[in-house]
Image (cartoon, rainbow, N blue to C red; front, side, top):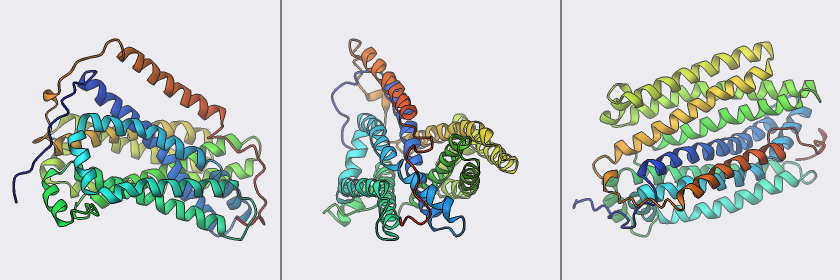
Length: 377
């Protein structure tokens, strides 16, 4: 095998210091991953609610209520995902563009899958009558397409941080129909994101229970029990998948989280403690039917865990690319006339997004009447 050729850095200078782009990458990624978790977790739990036995009336209501929110969560996921993707291209473009070229056709199919899944979410959200089972079948198709998108993303990003695999992947099939299936961390990494979405989807149901409590206490308790248990099972499963992911890393990278890197080790410890704390709080809240504690305390801990995991993910990427990526090589020419305006608009955009969440009631019970138990969905 010949030498690994890494494309040169973009000769255009960075319009702001490197740390500014790194911070923006982390912040926007956390926002994106939260929206994605609500969308994917909500969709999967809607299907589970529809197919699980018993409580037919409440299961149908859960399916309908969650389905109506999916066409809003999906564009939120896309919009909030554009920014971190752009920041990745600015900072890691020489790696990201190369891996995207190697997996060109699967990467292109992301747009096709996303469009079809989007239409599917809208169809299910608008449907109240029709052929029995048609709505849930279409939702299942949309969920499978979203999972395929996540799998393609995992392939691309794991390949982008392992340049040593580029020659063999490219010359094995120069047409662009490549995936990074031989990467040991691929499956646990993908499952780690998927299981996190199930946990956050459970929290979505907890918030819906809190919003519904005064209007329909029995339904609120059904939402809470279903969502709370989904959160518990998913979070406990995360410990198994997280251990699998850690053990699948090369030894020198694994040891970053086991003492070699103080910050990485601290973040892992906080993440584990936060996960255990959220399990304890949710389990206690379920026994006491304390919806408020579950909605606020558990959500706060979960947000801390997600932030820690996002920073760990970033440090792991830099560790993978240590031999190839040198931030000090960036030429920085700060555009002081534009940077303050950009930061103000960025904060205003986040604030506007939060206002939209409140205005459109994404975490509130739908205003429209839920379908009756016999409505075929």
